Length: 188
Ligand code: IMP
Ligand code: MG
Image (cartoon, rainbow, N blue to C red; front, side):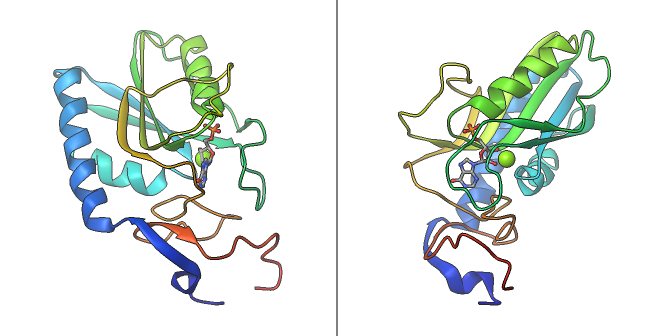
């Protein structure tokens, strides 16, 4: 299976709807920022495409920091605790920080990121996700909800537009469900 599209069972959110919603979200965010500068903390790697699209609709003074976080090791399709890869940005004293991620599931990733940003001195911490899963698995130690949400989706494993399975499928332009989620891609 060399074409990632060949493993798509169903498109959940097509690219046109994503694009329209990302523009709306950016409007909401810039309205609330009301001219204040912002530091964007983009959680890698899942938010890479979302963040790239979002920022082009945000006409504000902005710094960007990339923060490596991992919660779905390998080909797991369930969160298995959060790992921070690398370190959090420098001193964020007095700054308004917008944390951006691809999806809110148990809430542990965003919860951990918010904690790190706050302890780096941020004044205001805002959170934004493209997707939020309707799940009963929100963890007590996680973030219950994000400030800005693109779409609420069913509790199913999705890929595309930055979201991966086993680090593949991030380049699919739509959000989709896979036919198969193999335990390994070693044979590729
Ligand atoms: P949480 O810590 O359980 O909220 O999980 C959030 C992280 O898990 C996100 O940063 C994603 O990278 C990953 N994740 C959660 N659900 C999915 C999914 O359906 N597909 C791909 N990655 C997911
Ligand atoms: Mg992620």
